[in-house]
Image 1 (cartoon, rainbow, N blue to C red):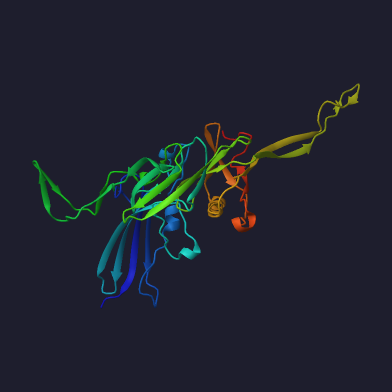
Image 2 (tube, rainbow, N blue to C red):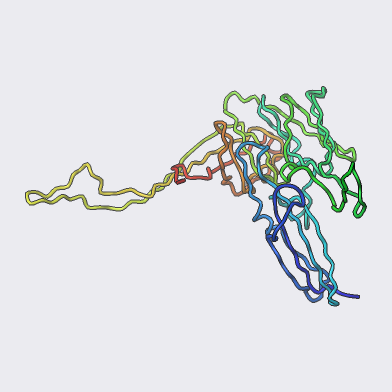
Length: 359
């Protein structure tokens, strides 16, 4: 029996329709079998990450979060025979925990870890969803009254025929593909906006399992609420409102050097007292802010941890979004048993210089 000798991976990462890649792959990697092993492993997550450009300007529908990854693996055996395996997957900027073990699956219908949500009163609740796996429907309730339902069908159409010719009118069609898709990668992981006033969101899967989200509206009259959007562990945009006190500060740095201001002539030697001898240059200014969540549930322990771990974060201000970076390095998990009322205080740095250096 022939044994595996080597394998060559070709990897394409691209936008648009599934299996629409062409041209040379981004990566071609050849590996030989390690003595004592029976398989050859390719670690591709970090390779793919380099080609996923995260972009968010405040419009969730136009955010760029995902791409397709298609691969072709050619296995070569010691008798010179070969086999070829191909596949395609949706890829994004998500991650798993050590406890999740190898290759954790992040394609659950609900693309966030919390089921209790605190939201600004009068604003539509946005729930991030994965629409191509198990999701069947989402129903919204205000009290016990249903205010709407959305049902999801697959945008992927499986083709069961492989070598059979079909005729439609006078055209000949030959099916020779694993699947067809009409949507692009970013439309599969996107959010859904609940009607204003929604208090309960019920997500139903294809096997009739349900996940229920509970919404608590905050009508903050003392402080101005601020919404922060970040890329969570599922690789999608999640929103969190901060209802407590906001504080801002600016850190300014500068360099200086000393100059001689003496003015010497044939009749006098003097220096003007209105001229500085300490010249300032390389002035930099960075703004930061402190936000408080207000009182929230224990589910937000995990949300805050993901917020601190994110590489992409924005704050909504003045009808714009500005990039910020959480500057906290630790989180102390809180429980209702001991803290009673849970509130998180987080510090953020604006991810740009306050003095405009963009030329």
